[in-house]
Amino acid sequence: MEKAKIVGFQALTDKVGRFSLRDKICLIPEMNRIGSHLLAAVFRGFGINARVMETYKGLDLGREYTSGKECYPCQITMGDILYCMKEEAARLGDDFHAEDYIYFMPEADGPCRFGMYNKYQRIVLDSFPELDRLKIGSLSTQDGYSLAGIIEDGRVRDLRKASYFSLVIGDILDRLLWRIRPYEKEAGSTDEFIETSMRLMEELLERMGPQKEFDKVLDRLEQVIEEGKGLIDPAQPARPLIGMVGEIYLRTHVHANQDLIRVLEGFGAEVVNASLAEWVNYISYDALRSARRGFLLALRRFRTQAMKKYLKDMMGYGGDLYYQEFRLKRTYARIRSLIDLPADHRVAHLEKILKEEDLLDFDVGTEACLSIPGIIEYAREGYNGVVNVYPFTCMPSTITSAIVGPLMNRLGIPYLDTPYDSTSQPGREAAIRTFMYQAEQHFKRHGRKGNAETG
Image (cartoon, rainbow, N blue to C red):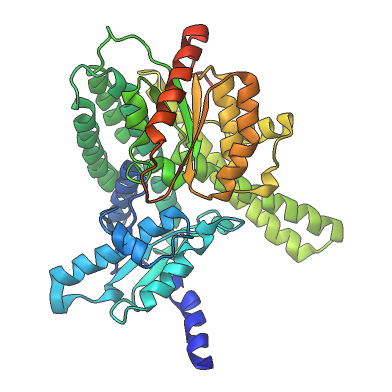
């Protein structure tokens, strides 16, 4: 019995971590559909056999091998990998070998259940003799999602830059979808157009990402945007503008949030969701803060070796953040000259808002550090309502709700919490209808600004 326990714990280090993806099939969960597919395309461009797994088809399996107390995205991703392996085994028969695959599941540190997904899923996978050799490739927020070790050292930096760029392009395609679809001339034309555009960007990023030919990708993206603008019916009046924040998986996974953006659009909204790039920028920003704090502590204690380490970390994370903000600003500058898509908030600006309002400290961590100031910034920019999307019992989003709900009430801005689990909530439509009625009234009284430049 004691030996079995030791072997079990050893699996959490031997079969969960950062592994070379060479000669492996890298299985990427579909969180945000466009972002996941573009990231996989970049990986393929660097010689990694990356695939995006089908999602939500294995939800029954996810429920079967979880208790229901886990975070909802854990259930979904658990089901995704089990369903994928089941399908691969049926397709390949005797040629199926679990060790040929690496399941890509990042993690976060701090007070969030996301940090335990890959550990729990490792235990479940090890309960299947045919899957115990499937490794889980994990990147961590503790080192800013470093990609070191998954490919040759000399190509890591280029892969990181191309991967980040793919997320920015994915964010722009998503925002283009939400900008056009509420005003489309022909129902369904925007969804079809964005799907075609995603496939085009996949091909370009796979081919041009390794050479960092980002301007050529943007040249083609500008053509896509000009074509997309032609789908808009200029006779349609402006709609109330709704900002969305929350837990990154739930707010971007359309099956998990029951296609909330489309539902809001059906009740008369135009929606802007927080971006994937904002989260990656936050990870780099927070890592830089931690390194700076460690350096100052080492300096006070005059620990020279620690000072050197933290100084190196500061330069690394600072360089990452500088590049990300540079790439983000340059990309949006080109796109926003063609269409009024909202730009991303700078993370330093969001921290400044928290300090000014004395609402929360970045030392607490989690997505609440982005959601709370993000909501305040939506209010300042003239949005007509805000929605907070999160898994049922999610601690960071519950913190967000507790702080922001009373604040939005004082400001007179409609606010809606939308927690999700694997059930259909009977009062969901009534709550959304009520929220949208309030947003419509706010729109009639105050109009909308939206899409303003942010700090």
